[in-house]
Image (cartoon, rainbow, N blue to C red; front, side):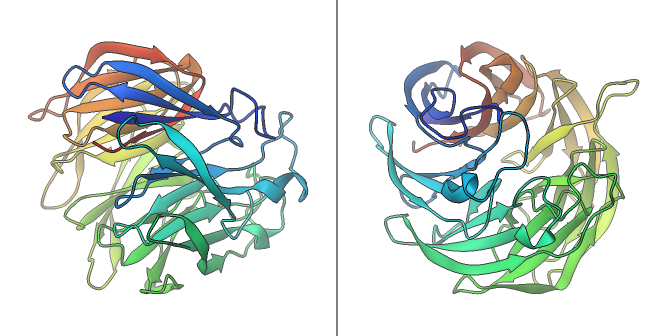
Length: 376
């Protein structure tokens, strides 16, 4: 088993070729959680989120220009923005650059692949501080049988200028997630506190769904989504106020309704509220959420009738700024990317209680920001 880790601190190395901007490969012991470095593929362009094709051994990496001084990239600087396709050797786990392709928008932040491996979806926020709202897009990219992108199949762009107090006064599609059947695409809009919903047709065209959006609390900042495997519920990670919004969902009609809002930050916590990622465990019994400034992972028991959450336990992430995490295919182990600690760490997962127990295995890697498990 192999684990793929995106390496970037989103500060330097934006032109690619710098060792700090890379994807690293680790051999992973599925019994002990031990990690051993296999390879680091350098020369990637501030790699952000990654996803793996479920049908062929291919990994997709969102690449975008980020200026070290946080200034808005110019159109020329962003000319190379897009998705890098990395071929995976199933035997050695090693990766190689297979292609680069446009995502049909600027400054791609997040990518995801549907369950058939036929389409790659991308969230393209555009230039971060550019008030022009027309640069924000979500796109569907057609994939060949070999997993390589072949063209843009569908695209939607977003209008509207956000309140001036926002850090980025524009629409900001932060990520793209499909429901379990990949009938619909969900696009969290970080700055407008909406999750937009689109129907996906067989040819990859995106059209506004019957229920076009769900509303999140003002100022919450929706970032990521986690679906329950039953498709009856989904959970929205709200970065700015460190809450989880719980929604019911009817996969036939596409209708969704708010059920609950949960504060992820611990009682008495006075630091910055900043959560990043959530996943429902493979059994569907527990939801896990990372708190980047509290350096913790919260575990919630899921009510199987209503989808509501009850805090079950909270665990130190064994590092600093846990930006991302992923379960092993068996669900028995979890790997956390502790970005500011420059380490990834593994945990045993208790199937009965959902609790996490450190395996004692951690390994150094530069500014890990995303974790993806590879072929068995």
